Length: 185
Image (cartoon, rainbow, N blue to C red; front, top):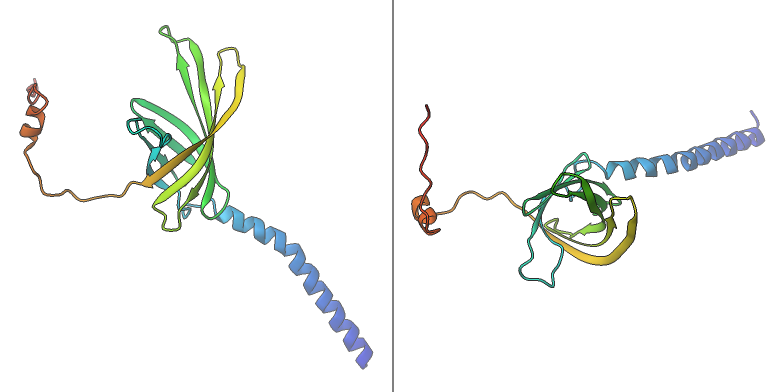
């Protein structure tokens, strides 16, 4: 093979390698974005959430983000289910809806919350913005209102500490005492 043919073969091989890298690049980038959706995302876990920092006495929420993209939101006696999706290594969007019924159990409207969250570098807190859209029984919506701000603090497992009173003393402090156990029949 003469020198000109070797150079041509080398140029063709380099061009094919370049085209192969360019073609693989977007697929690799997509795979990386999919990898962000795994259980390794820092949002996975349970968080104590404050959706109104201007109020000192608003009921906090406990929200659990599972590794499969499910969201479980508990605030007072209400439990709401939703979904979340990572948008980057420390960011995510969430959506959840709550529905209401009247006293007879007929659908009486609800709301949908959509939020964008960012987990802090240490992984123990997040901040975000959200919108709320009211839902009426006839299917009409108000459109999204907002934005509101939200913060979250990771709930950590803790071992029991040293008791400062007995459980009997604790329940007696409520004024009614400890409820009596009913013997099994």
